[in-house]
Length: 129
Image (tube, rainbow, N blue to C red):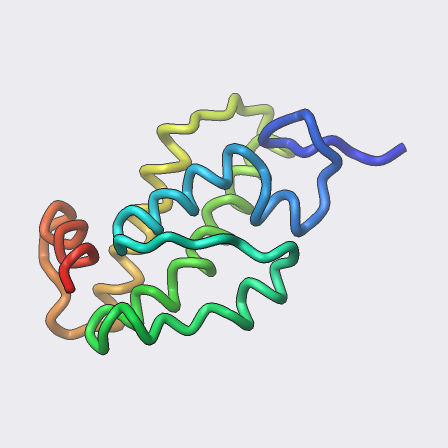
């Protein structure tokens, strides 16, 4: 018998469902699109999504952050999934969103010299053109 998705409990857990199409994961994708001010339609598979994730429209300074965003979503979702699967924890959508945003900020700060030093400034910076 196939396993149900640990995040939404309504669909079969496949990599593509968990990392792209799960309703809980879609919240993170929507955060990314809102922060960068873009309209986007995700592909059917993780592979297709990553192959089409160029970000030439976000500008040179924010391009690294754009390229990190999918991997950060994958990392955050996988960590949350494992907490649910192995740690007997309850899903907290707020914890998932907070974890994602803080991870992305941390990753970008480690990669970009002039990254904003506060989380609020970072979120504003992502939306700047």
